[in-house]
Image (cartoon, rainbow, N blue to C red):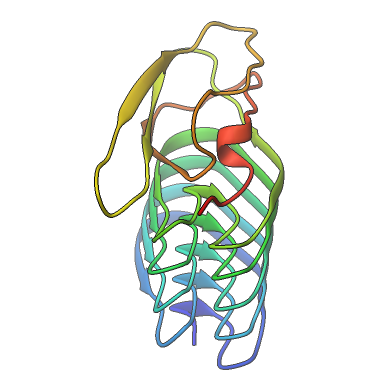
Length: 193
């Protein structure tokens, strides 16, 4: 099952974290926060606190478990580290699961996908859509996720700024200060292979 959320074959939804120190580690095929194995993760909000979420085998850090979607996820504050395992996204879908309606408009977020999964978006083989990452100042460093090498580039945010990041769609958001405004990009939208 999930560290916080659904058990085996069960979804996790209506989860709110607004403070404290939270460490959530998914069990077999479960998300750190969200769905259990074969369970979706939805309506998840983090507005404060120090949150570490690690998916189990093929689970998202925050979002869906194995073979399941992550949707309606909002991070508006706090320090959040979300790591997918194997084919799970950092924030979004588990292995083959989609990641959609994900909004980051505050906080410090470090999201890293598993093998060929997006940092924010779809798991391995999953599609990402309707993802809004909204900083006004500072920078975002993006690192491609693969087993062989991690190549990074940094984009300095200028408000208002709407752009698609170049490069592979299998990318990780490693660090970034996100406050307000709008940045969207293909880099965050789907898992690559």
